Length: 457
Length: 143
Ligand SMILES: Nc1ncnc2c1ncn2[C@@H]1O[C@H](COP(=O)(O)OP(=O)(O)OP(=O)(O)O)[C@@H](O)[C@H]1O
Ligand code: SF4
Ligand code: SF4
Ligand SMILES: [Mg+2]
Image (cartoon, rainbow over all chains, first blue to last red):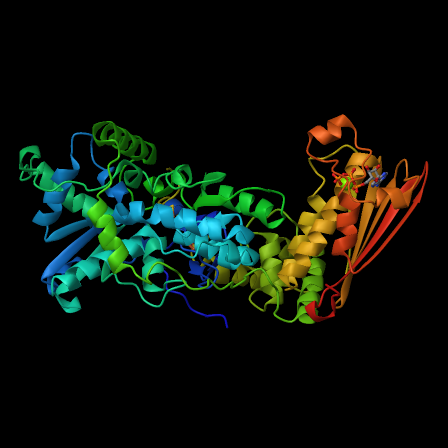
């Protein structure tokens, strides 16, 4: 029923990790623990939000991507870029220049993720109309949010909009186009330039879909560096603008906060930032909020402009893209390419729905209610002894997390420094309690070291 | 398992705390979500009634593997005519309370609908006591 292992693009490099526990404190789903002086990830709790990546002081958390050279295995090398990529560069770098730079580094064609947005908008409105009993509809756009709902708000999985997000629709469209032109699948490599780890997880282990049509994933920071290098070398210029962005104003801003909500019918709300989202979902779950039709929920502050692989400041990216969208709207009044819409329609027959999203609750203590109750009683008893200050010295993010680990057999009461002090009064010898600390934090944690990485930041 | 929560009259900000906590507990116990929903709705209405109509109260929650029993015991004006209060749409809520979006007179009927067993007793000038029972296993609920 519940899949035990999930693909996570985030990996902890144990050779670089210093076990400082910053990530453990930042994780919204309490998926991290420290032991043996290193951070460890609980695979089925992690939602790929990347909050741990942001706070790691040593760069020990990395986003695993495909080898860039893989693109050269294909005759047609498609760069599938998110609109936020074009918002990373200084103001005077036009989308056309970025397109040229992408070709210089090896891509043969460039497609934009949000290309399918104009096709998707009426589908969403239609979906909401047909699913009045599932309100509020939660957008399927941000994969970290879909995973958050699965593990922490399992009752709300039925609210998730079962329409494939723009990334999936556009990749199906690209496949359809090449097929129409007579190319075999093996000749066409679609490489997605990702702003975050969540999208990678969504591609490598999709929810509500069997398999992604994307060939590989390249991190946006890498692409940014390489393309900016081309641009700085002055081998691309404004005058050679042969390609340009095909996006309409509302597609350009789709991945920004309010990008979806402002174009959907009915009462819509947009919430960004994982903690804000959790706070609001709690209210939704309690039935405290009535009459909302659609929720755009994004894990990152400022949505994808704030993706962990972004190079530019998120506020500047959002401002730049909004400005471009506005200028374009004034210029062409948001004209939509009708023949392209027809093509989408043709290529996506029977390909726009996601199948059911399954809950995989990480909140329950046991499948069996009687056992869960026993465990909860034990947790409550243990909590009477723990100090309740959430210091994290036990290697768990809070006293409650330690108590729950203990009843699951994944922790011990002697991991608590405070209880060690108490136990040292009777049975525990100080030598042993020192050993326990070393087991959690590593051998060298108590040695003098003036070069600790996060000492004088 | 036993839990207790205090409710203060007039404190709408915190009314909802008990139902939130109970929800968390029931989720951890892997109780069916439709059952949790009914319990949370009933308890929330009860909490708000104490905040809206009484001076203060205590909520006692008892959970075993079969059922949850919630007792909401308040000090307050009491209810003179319980049959009338139980009627959908009947409310004595003040304009201030109505302004806050309460006072549709649906609270008590809602609590009754969501419970498998429901008892209300009240003494004018002393207080009101609600007892709510909900079966936790899906197959034995009467709905
Ligand atoms: N704990 C209580 N103490 C005193 N009176 C109460 C109490 N609970 C309910 N009542 C009385 O019963 C009436 C009906 O209660 P009910 O909960 O059905 O409606 P309401 O609280 O007025 O409005 P709503 O719950 O729809 O916001 C109330 O208006 C109030 O006069
Ligand atoms: S990606 Fe998010 S959920 Fe996963 S370990 Fe990091 S902070 Fe926790
Ligand atoms: S908001 Fe955007 S960048 Fe952030 S996790 Fe979600 S999809 Fe990725
Ligand atoms: Mg009421």
